[in-house]
Image (cartoon, rainbow, N blue to C red; front, side, top):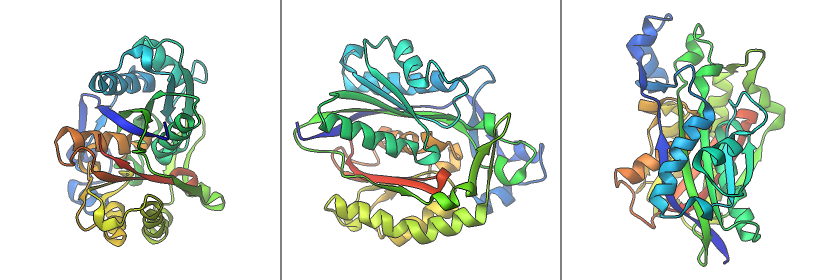
Length: 312
């Protein structure tokens, strides 16, 4: 085997939906204010007793069912999350236990909103190296637990959920080379700190960085995959803010691609946002099987990671 490909996807969102009018009853905001600034209409919130690994396992179970593989076939579980409370067992081990997997390697990755694309690259590299043959790659976050619900600048953004991919060894690579990195000296622009941890950010700093510096990097991702932006069938950026997604996609030049805008109904779900949005696109049949799709995560640490995949 010379590479890996994404075989199947799955996603999960909690039942509770919080609309903009609901938020307006909690803080000084309005539906018009939120939609004009971030493009979000609704977000899903986990129950107080609903855990990150519970959401991750629900999404992973759907991806596994869609893949046709048996639980015993999975030999690697990677969970990207920044909102896990417990340190051990980690979220990946808890997911493996919930799904009855045999003896997989289990690892959590915390790269905040770029977590899923980092985890996907890690799975691809591990499979290419021959250390695994079938991986569950999951992005899951309970962002509501780190939200200050009195801060109208951040509480309007966050939502909860999980998305998962089954990634397997392949003779023809279906996961392109990753382009990844960070801007450590600006890492404080996005923070989840304190006890209890609370999400805060320098919104204008993040907006300027994302809309100015990320489009050339996204074009480099396409070049590394040997494809032009015009050939992309889909673009799934981190679902941070519609006012970031749209200009970055426009500057990329993916004029023929379906642009994921799941942020409108799901809010910013951190590491879950890319697999959640991608799974919905595939479920609705908006991107054809085998078509090239750009995945590009960015955010906390001012980290970024992207790759072009062939749609399952």
